[in-house]
Length: 423
Image (cartoon, helix red, strand yellow):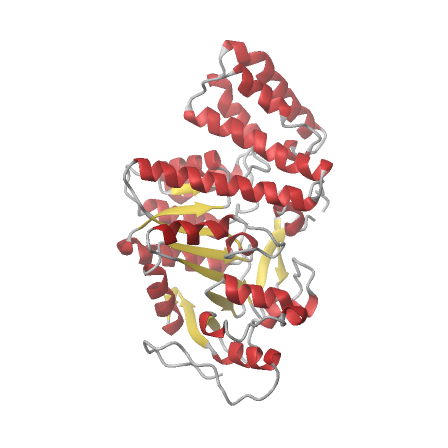
């Protein structure tokens, strides 16, 4: 079993073993002024009442859904920060992107590497959902997001897009699909780079023969740097592939020579770089599309994330602000009675109770418990913005994650009895 945080945060070693509802008005919701207890109690009481219901019977509906759509339509970027492995989150994301198309949303950024995202889009355009599922099933392509509901989400977004535009942006490093990327490079390698390319290929083959994914092996990024040095003017796709392999190895290598924090920060810098490159490409074409981003919630928060660094989620607000716009950040978490998919052995996923899953080892202080409403009868949407005056300085000693969340996210969707994604 592999812990999702240990894998997704790339900690540096290969570990593969394993409540009334407020009325809809144009005025911001008011927090009760009659509560005379301390600031922690006032904040918790405000969290309990400042909610709107959301239903998921076939498609999202209800006051909470309507409010989310309105807020996202008004933003230049909508960021969905999720706890991975929840089926309803993928379904909500698909419906939200569809609802936002008419307001200018035409790009989707996801937690995949650039070429893998590009090729998933290509197979989806040829063969729809089955093309994505077949791509996932290949022995050389696997990702922590290879879940059926995620495939359905991507398929629905791509299927509705114009045929001549690229909609899917992969911003992350690669973990397990190095053999696919290396094989993709092979026909394009020039004569002068074939010796260094063979050393790269041999290093990957050797690692997998020892049951160690290449990216988590002790291989240094210099093995890819040598290929790049011998191949000075590669085509765009080959250049992107080489840089992804090099940076993916570097992210893990930094953890071996430095700290886990160094590795996490390098990954964040890589994702920020890729987002900047995609936005510059659009600018050169005279385009300024609206963008939805869907990543783990540690990446999508505004400002400093939960390990005190500026991740890719801190960029959209600044980019949008240059044109007078803003970004809308939505946290999506499984609440009471929910289940989610986590890693099992041999490229498998298993369902586990979200009540027991504690990614950041925060115990009863974790967000899925503090933000959940024990009295909820269904899914709920929380508007965090009117609560920010209550999330005041000094409450960090009670629960720093909650304070950071209220300021870093604009809203939360809390599932009630959500389902684990299926493999």
